[in-house]
Image (cartoon, rainbow, N blue to C red; front, side, top):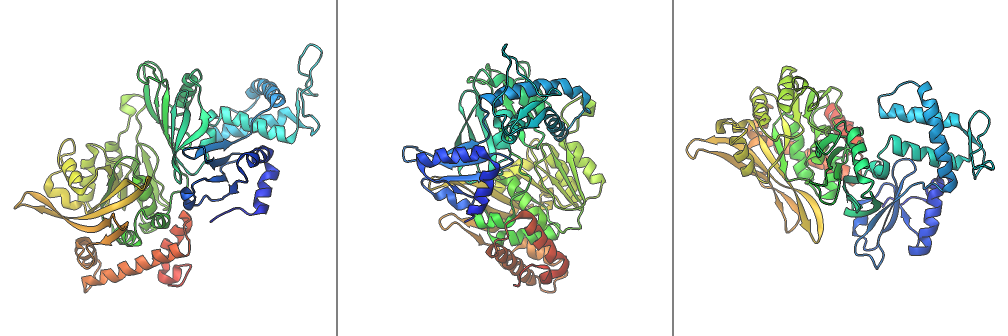
Length: 550
């Protein structure tokens, strides 16, 4: 468990008066909350959680459930302006508008945030006694010398937070944008916003957008994505400045309850492979198999349904590619994270004149000309799948995600319209990983359920031959290495090309990698970048490059 110490909690309290007031109030109602940083996965099993964890800046999250509540709720703890602070905020906003033309022009949100902070510094004077706002007999606000507003240090922090939140951040949903445990944000006008939380799954929040405010709010968010929504363009998809992917349905003619949106959060630090092993998404054996395959440049598809964690798993296994390799990623939405030094990140462009638009097909063709060691399309959906197979045929290892629930469905969709890959070409694909989102005992979990190796086209039956490498035993929640001592990919496509005199020797390498991963989990090495250093240390120096003894 990662409970915060009394000293750590006191430090947070000293810096955040709004947190002090909130905790005092909640103690009286439901008792002392437990502070965590980071939030352990095990708390999901608590029947009546009462916990707080910090996110970004001045925002804290309280998740709790009392005996009269059916499910836990998510409450954002952020500064709330009192009447005096609201009045001072109005005056500060007027002065910002007046002084802003004197400042340099900005394009990026970070630059705007910096300018706003500078302006607030120039406009305000710290006076710890100035808790209220002074007015003359006519009710006009009396400014300090030089058109400045006197504020306490606490008021300044609260006002600055409010200004940045509205002008740079996500407004009413800003409290979610810095929470590393949020996967999706679901907003429907006039209803409490719901979240997909990495620990607590679907959870209701204390935040809602009133129906009267929803049109303006969704328009503002769509402008931040660079694809303004309107009655003439009621549905838009785009990317927010932080990389999160947004879908907005604006028109009440389409969305009966009023404007709605879904935001798929972008995580700056990916989940590590050891964390996925610890959660049971895959086993150390599955990870060891993938490690060897990525080291030796094999091509595969990671498949499954919506929200089954395909991109999370893809990001977690990319560090298995040796550190000196040149990697190209092609995406419609920037979700892939690559720690390698030589990483070319290509994005589609769907806006502007038609001749200036760039689709996935164009990006893949451009990538082929650059002679990368690995091509990683973020997701294959249509005809660009043909280019992926052309890349594999020319010796470029490829790994991508694809919507399909079995290896049979993958083959059917790739050999049928609109992709139309000839069956005889399917052996360029080495294996298919299937990952699914499953419900068990009322809780959702994600599991790699199978890995199937592609052996090639069998003319006699006019079909693709596949061999089960790994299977998932649902009853025991355990991954089984079905192809142990009988893996077509490990023996025929890796061991022979790697110069093994006895191809069975590849399983010793498999066991070693598995042992390393088990040891990393045992040592609780879960941070993504620490995991990267372990894997790359092993590549560079063998067992001597590991931070532990085997």
